[in-house]
Structures are given as structure tokens and as C-alpha cells.
Image (cartoon, rainbow, N blue to C red):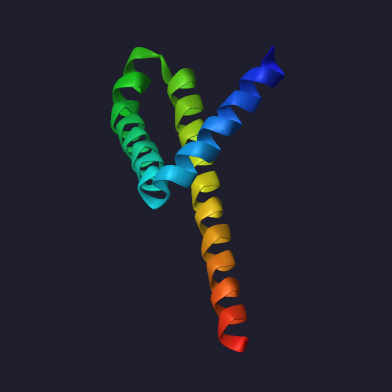
Length: 90
């Protein structure tokens, strides 16, 4: 069951990326940045109310997802540079 959910999510992500490309990745990155900013701005209130563990977990998760998105962007830019260099050599 979990494997099928993961496979479906992968297919959907691949389809969205192929159809929307850069705007899709931009929306994902912006969503993560907005989530991080909101988590950081809510942190003082959560510290006072005692709900800090969940907030810190959310912040760490959003940060990890953003790092993943930036790494994907780097890989894509590197691949684009390599394709351009190969075309210019031939």
C-alpha cells in the first residue's frame, strides 16, 4: 500500500514537473520558504505556550525540504550546463 502511494506520488511529481517545469519548482520552493518564515515567526508564541517541540520539528522538516529543492535545482542547472557544453563542442 505504501509503495503504491509512493509510486503514485512520484508519477504525479514527474508529470507536474514535465508539464509545468520551472513554475512548479518555484511554487514548491516559495511554499517552503513561506512555511519556514511562518514557523519562525510563530516560534516565540509557541515557546511561551509550551508547544515548541512540534514547531521545531516542523521548522526542521521545512528546512530539509527546502535544501532538497535547492539540491534538485542545482542538479538541473548542472545538467543544463553540461548539455550546452556538449552542443557547443559538437
